[in-house]
Image 1 (cartoon, rainbow, N blue to C red):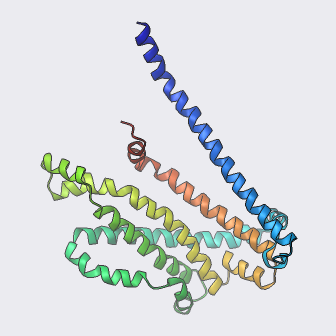
Image 2 (image 1 turned 45 degrees about the vertical axis):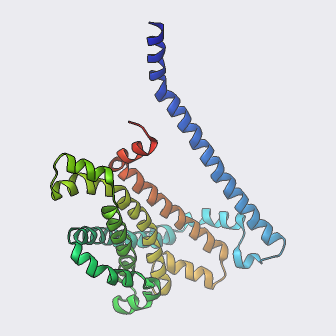
Image 3 (image 1 turned 90 degrees about the vertical axis):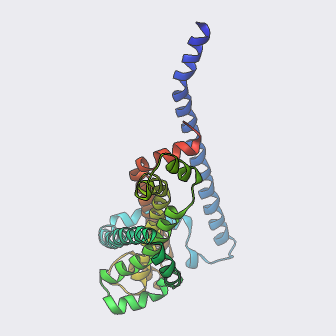
Length: 281
């Protein structure tokens, strides 16, 4: 009885120990992140104090922090430029994610077409689409359409490649199990191939969010009337580097928050994959 009771107690205490361990790990990770940020700012400040680089070219940590706080009182930055860039990013991301994933699934279902088209896809993907931004501005004008088109051109190939990678990656265990239970091709794809490809596709979507912001801002820098890229260009041209760095930090925070939000929203689709990775049953 004593042995059984102690075993049951250990089982009941396991979630509590796991939660405490998880909190401790989270605390360590945040401590490491804070230390990295502190070291980076210290090096940044030291470089300017030693005169290796003039502050007019790279700004200062305290100046950037001051401008970061002050920019929230400027509605044209937060409510106009940032909102404009986020809208471009979201529209381009949605269009490219849906179309890239759909084309990837279509090519997977048609192996002959995939073999014929893939060299062309690789060739198109090797084009520096950011360098083509002036053409998009010429074709679509200075409005939102040109930036959305640039975002789509970047993200489409990322989603196409990750979708095909997830669907075509071999898994001998799944193949053996599907043959053992007598699955046909449709059942094998629906119940084994697609679920196994979901983590790879979602990882591609997380990467695509970053590329979406990159495309939107790059398009605005090349030619735009509104947006974060236009504001960054204005700050750089007037040597307001602290404002430039502050707005860049804000953009990084928004982009990182978007990726984290994507992970939270899609966590339920990859819960089995996380459990499998931890070795739990």
